[in-house]
Structures are given as structure tokens and as C-alpha cells.
Length: 68
Image (cartoon, rainbow, N blue to C red; front, side, top):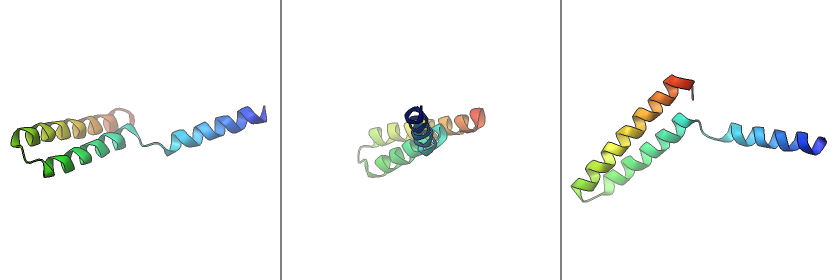
């Protein structure tokens, strides 16, 4: 019983340490922006920009929808 309680507490702590959905989408958007800044091919840079903007919209929606 104590082992199960310790395991449940460990899992709660692990979940609490994870980023929210909104934070995860913003991290992805920041990485895409960095990739775009070093991409010499304009077509690829434009695609990265579109993906970045989509990730930022998804982060905003996650915050608005569930407080994440």
C-alpha cells in the first residue's frame, strides 16, 4: 500500500513538472522561428514561418480552451 502511494506521488510530481500544452506549443514555435532564421532557402523559410504561426495559434487556443 505504501509502495502504491509512493508511486502515485511520483507520478503526480512527474505530471506537474511537464509543460502545459500551451507551453509546449510555444516551445515548438520558438524552435521553428530559430530554424527559419538560419534557413537560406526562402521556400523552406516560408514553410517554417507558417508552421511557427500555426503553433502559436494552437498555444493561444490551448490557453483559451483549458487554461493550459
